[in-house]
Image 1 (cartoon, one colour):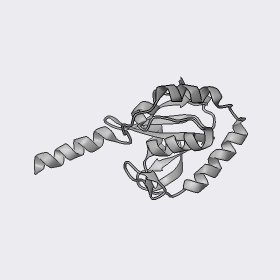
Image 2: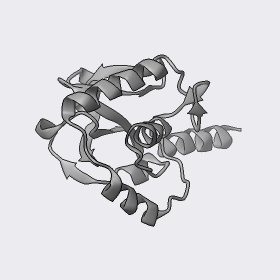
Image 3: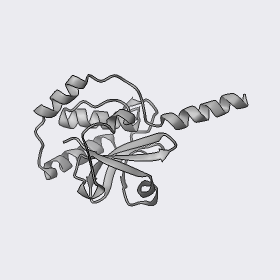
Image 4: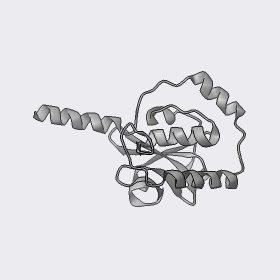
Length: 162
């Protein structure tokens, strides 16, 4: 019984928000060529409106609906709904998209990634002034700040896809 408990703990720690679903790579590259970037202010307005529609939706591992959603699915849905850009389902694969940028280059819509545990990754969408929207395991879809203790210490990298 003790072995089963420890195995379950290790499994949970190594998966985090990562899920594995296949994505058509040809579709990924073709969608980027058809998307026309909007000015930052317009994009920011869309992001806040999108957040209002999801605010408070609870976290559910593997979830992808308003009844419960996880971080990578929230990002996938955000990019598909707002920008018509399909993304891979897992955080592990989402971090390979776009180009890496420095934290001081963040613009609305950029993805921010965190290492929240041993082999556990988390992702959110940058808004403005150090704020990003994401799915908290305790509070659901919320807005947090990059410079708060936990997120500042867990910050890993940012990626630009737009």
